[in-house]
Length: 336
Image (cartoon, rainbow, N blue to C red; front, side, top):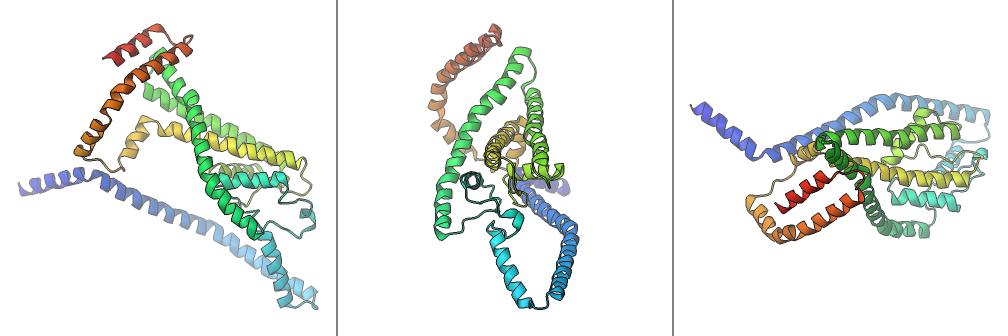
C-alpha cells in the first residue's frame, strides 16, 4: 500500500516537472556530445599532428646543417615573421605574390563573410583603422543581415513550403502532416544537390589541389557558417577569371545561406518537431495563459475577417488549382 502510494507520488512529481527533467537530460546529452566530439577529434587528428611536427623538425635540422652560416635564432626570427604575415593573409612564396587580398572583389568577399558570420580568417584587417571599421561595420551589418535574411526567408517559404503543402492537402485530400514531411525531405534533397553536390563538383574542377571531398567539405563548412578557413577558393596562383570567380562565390554563399535557412524553417514547421521542442520549454501557468488569452481576445476576433479576406485572395490567385468546394469549406469554418 505504502509502496504504491510512493510510486504514484513519484509519478506525479515527474509529470509535474516533466519539462525540467527533459531540459536536464538535454543539457546532459549536449555535454556528452561535446565530450564525444573531443574524443573522436583528438584520437583521429593527434597522430597526424605528431607526424607533421616530426617532419618539420627534420626539415629544420636539415636546413641548418646545409646552411651553417645561419644560426638557429636567425632562422626562428625569420620564420616567426613569415608566420605572422601568413596569419594576415600575406605570403612570401613566389607562387602567391600575384594575388592581392584587398582589391575590390576580395574585399567584397571579405565583407560577405563578415556579415554572414562565416569568417574564414584567411584575410584580416592589417591597420588599426581597418580593425575599428570592421567592428563598427559588423555591429551594424550583422543585425541588418539577420533582418534581411529573415525577410527574404519569410517571403520565400510562403511559395516554396506553405502553399505547396496546402495545395496538396486541399486539392488531393492528403494528410497535411504527411505532405509536410514528404515536402521537407524533397526540399532538403534538392537543396543538398543544388548547393552541395553540384558546387562541390564545380570547385573540384576550378581548384587545382581540391578533390571532391575537400570541395564538399568547403561547401558544408561555409553554408553552416562554421568557416574554419583551411579551404578558401580563388586563392590559387594565376587563378583564371579571379574577379568574376570571387563575385560568383559571394553570390553562392548568400544564396546558399538563404536556401539553408528555408530548409531549416521548413523542418521547424513540422508538427512532430514542434511537439518535440515543446518538451524542453518552460510551461506557462494556467493563470498566465488566461491573462494572455484575455489580452489577445479582441485581436484574435478582429483578425478573423482579415484572415478570411486574405484566404479568399489566395484562393482567387490559385483559382486554376483549387476547387470551389474547399473554399466553401473554409468559409464555413471561419463563420463557425
